Image (cartoon, rainbow, N blue to C red; front, side, top):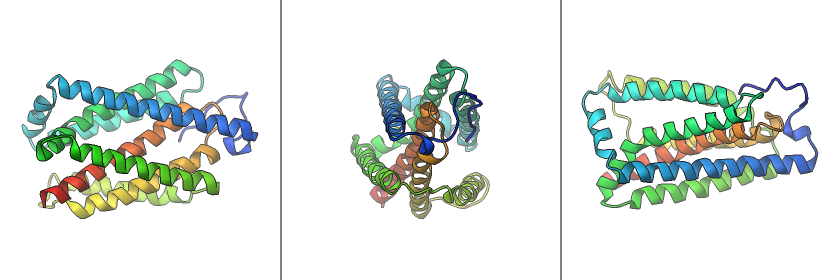
Length: 238
């Protein structure tokens, strides 16, 4: 994660007084809740406006459509993170978080539509959402109460991320299917990412970086929600 170039802030949150640490964590989770709320509102708006069906049709037009969408999402994510870690402009930080949230809402639209079509209602989506919330609370509690530095997970997550991305890209060109077990493995991966990013709240961020911290957490939470939903869809299909 890119650090601020702020001469007036020295040290990480873990080196700050207890009151500042508590305030930083509180701000981060309020911003995370705001991003999740915006995401839910955007999805409701997109689905109710009837844009879900055209989105599914666009992805079905060619097998490489989803690959192009993924590439665009990765580019937007990179821009959003750069903005969110901008130490000289708070407005730019919020713009980065908002941009990333909108991008997540767009990329989630097709899978939400498929889940609704499969179940006939929002049941699978709500189940995945509730399980995600429960897991995030549990993982965050472990990371924050133990106060252990889980930065050692960073290298493993980076390698795992490249392997997962490679398998996803390969699935567009090779006769392989990323089904139940891949989704299960990615749920474990996303859980590790949440643990790692929650630990980073204290050990890697500086005071004032709560917007960037919330974006990083939101990315991990969205990843967990995505693969929990895929897992439930696989079980429902079977």
